[in-house]
Length: 186
Image (tube, rainbow, N blue to C red; front, side, top):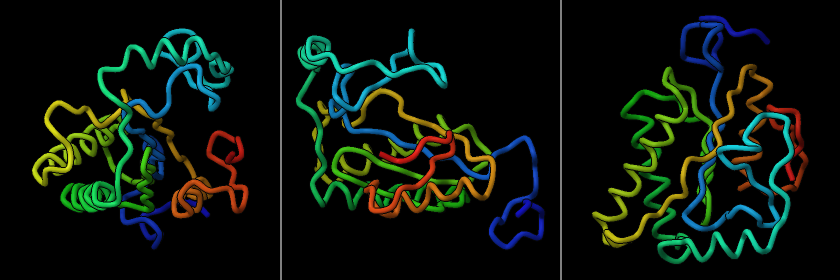
């Protein structure tokens, strides 16, 4: 299916220079360290598409844990609800189209259409969620709830919106879904 101004799935003008949506993932502080079993990428050697992730390394993981400024942040249900409500409000305020939102205890998935760079969208979500949790006394001022950066995948076709199924299932692997970069989920 091609995108065009009359396509009912999208309320945006056709523009081949902008993706259909972004698949944004960001984690809570300290819940995914370099060297852990899930693999990771750092800002220098392996943060290039198609290159291998950092292998499991218990020494590096322990070193990363020792560098943490406070304990890992795991959201309770009240905090998760604040994050969900805030992301929904920020998207509506900015007139961004929120396709899917998954708020877990240790990470957030968002599939969104917006004419803005995904890093700016992610930073806006993090900032507003932090503010709302602090206003509601759900985190203290000395706690940094988010890890640095996150994942920002550009979804170029409507078929790539299959990422929504992954998000709405909470990232579970009930059914294998192909991600936009060609890898299958978990």
